[in-house]
Length: 318
Image 1 (cartoon, rainbow, N blue to C red):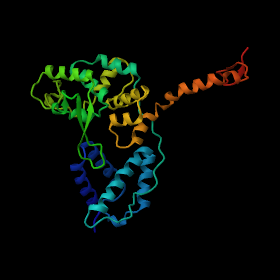
Image 2: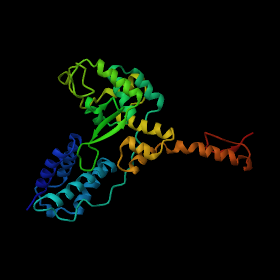
Image 3: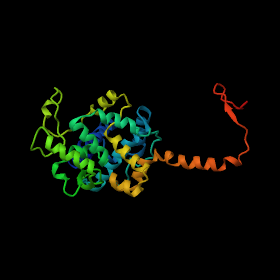
Image 4: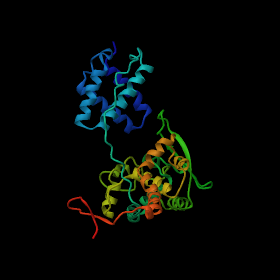
């Protein structure tokens, strides 16, 4: 009879080939946590919803609702894979199909326009070109790190980004228009890049001890780059992905349609784009509410009031 460890091993072998390293590491970490609570040598037939619910409730208590639900999503997907592909197949009733845990998720921080430009204006050389490319393409970090010169079509003013953010995990290309500003910046960078003949547009040009072995090679993480720039600029820390949100919010503020923003962000579903824009929706309606207030102001028979900030009471103004 198949044991839980065999299921996990086969599924992780599949994930290692199919998904990016970050996704694979996430799934492997989930199984490590799961097997601290559940015996990996036990049969898959013995796993039930009571056991999985107890595990997820413990994750909820010790970590968060978001963390528990993320574990649930990965384990649920792993079991569904086993139902379809393992021999013998896993039981059809997925034991991870339990209710989600309640969660409180903080909205992603999107930098104000002035903060982004403070950071941008402190950048130089390749770093400046990279930030501009993030801004003009609303690109994901992995997409720019794998960007090659063969993906930059200067003649037709377009750029091809390759992404794995699809259901099957395969790399798929998306063409995006290249603005005149970005076109000039990348053309200039291609001429000025210190190491010629490299396929990637952006490469490691630093010779610090922690990255000197990557000199001339494509970036993998650039983990502390944005943090250092933000600290130097004296603004709240934000990362590469926040620039993607910043571009989306800027387009929204300019009056772009949801379908246009969806095309730029390359979301398969408009609901995903809506989630990006949800946090800035309140500013979109602020003007409407102000107009509404002014329109009906004359019909409101109310004496001037002021708030006593110590007691919280509303009092008539003298």
